Image (cartoon, rainbow, N blue to C red; front, side):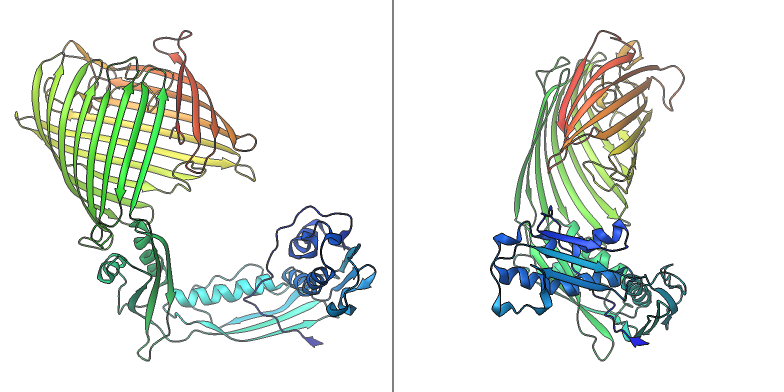
Length: 592
């Protein structure tokens, strides 16, 4: 019986493998392909394309390091009695002095005889915190290996840290290999340490950000029991400001009173950012957008964003539309997860059925409940001048939009899994005396298939309804239309509305659905098949008196660092233009 000390919390570093040449070979006797791949990845020699092109000293150094690297990879998989031979020009590398290196080495042969994989005899770890979940493989009779031992130790430490024991660590370990039985006995003793309390947050690396503002935004609960999830949320709050390109929290030394200071290593982002966007549609024309952003106006991550957009340029429906807006926001107001925002926007809309010029003032709060759930409440006052089939009129409106957003997507620009749901209820009152409420919802889901997630299914459901307000006084853009890039591709922009008061205008209810099959092709290219459907009715709550239309088509995607470039071709399936019309849409990012 031999005692075999193993460092549980270290792993063999992996080196990316390149294509092996004939002069560097690896032979693994009696092992599966998975072990062969692990050993190839662990070997530095296997990354050498041609040993003859390197100085002999470099090859010898790589060979000497490969003994330990290959041994660590074998221990990971439970092979504790292996034989490793590395021969350089038929000489064992361990016998060659690096100070008396031969001429350039022409032949490198690595031979590994793993032997039989060991199994766990005794598998003991403790003391354990309540609710500790050890890996399934840490049990008598299971395949042994440093990987599962390390996982068991990490699980035990993680569980103690979740109970407030920030300094939990391995107190001792006894690992015994019984080669005759091919068994490994593991006894791991943990030291939970005392329950720690959060101490002060100590920012480092900040230049423009004020320390007191950093502490307010981080919201570290000084004096509360240590909790890793709370620490993750503190880091998330600092990242969410956009004022930092890097946020790293490090635990300091435990003080005699069990308080644990937290050091925040921060790298500030550039103060300003400028961005541009463009989209092209055969019916809606060109849309050009730009924004300018200042991330840290007064040293507290206060943000000012200016946006401008021109759309409908060269479009077939209506004239051009324009929007200019400014939003000023302050983080950590009332709570560390609450942001206060003020905004002003000026808008011009020139549509087929109406023209509108409007100025809008808003103020409100946005709150993040968790990593996936956020909410907002705003007060908005708007004044608009409207010309449509009903009249030329001025409209003053006070509204109170309340919204919730749940977002678990893995990627905002090109999701492969997760859900997104955004719902807003907007009570409103108009100066002429009428009022009511408007509700909108946008739900999306994404599923991936295959080992590389190369095939994805994306689905979208849109809902909208408007109850209250006289039809001849409501802002026409508060009513619902269907058709175009954001609703039903293959149908003209806002081509489906409803008859209200004898006038063709938008409806009080809208239902839209979209389904896409996305497939990666080669390189950065991908393809999409899609089908969209829309429904608009004149009454609220999706009454039965409305109209349907639909469209379908194909698309091409090309991945870029800022999201996929999108080209979609679509044609009507039902409604107007079946068998006649063809529309194209170009933009950045997926359609939804």
